[in-house]
Image (cartoon, rainbow, N blue to C red; front, top):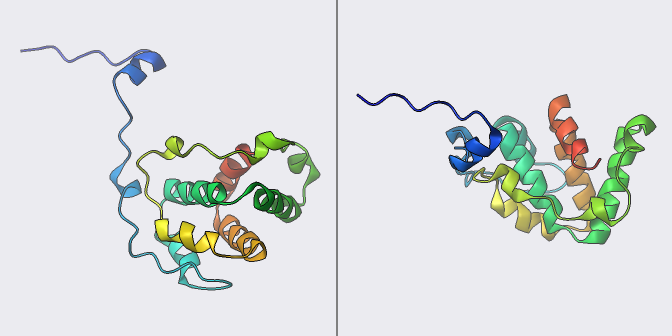
Length: 152
């Protein structure tokens, strides 16, 4: 009988072993997501109650990446107003660095409602800001911390 392989001792060894398998609940198709409609709709309850935390984060990443630079500036200003806490907001990076595309590979394999990205891109900037606000407000403290962490 073959002995069990020892567990990888380092991150490098773990990385060499291959990609991490994403738990199945984060990969389930979200084709049943309701339409993203403003200002209200079932989409918000779907986002909050039917999606996993990684799916919510992946959705935000794709919505952010679908916006142009000027829209991203508007989103950031709005987020800073929402947070209303200089201790936190003063740590947000300035300049072009904070406006770059976010890395979608962090949540590789995690599903999101793809039709929302198209609907989002068709909204005006003010509605986009409201959509982001509504999505951000549904997040728990840990998820909000993840969002803010990408900006610092």
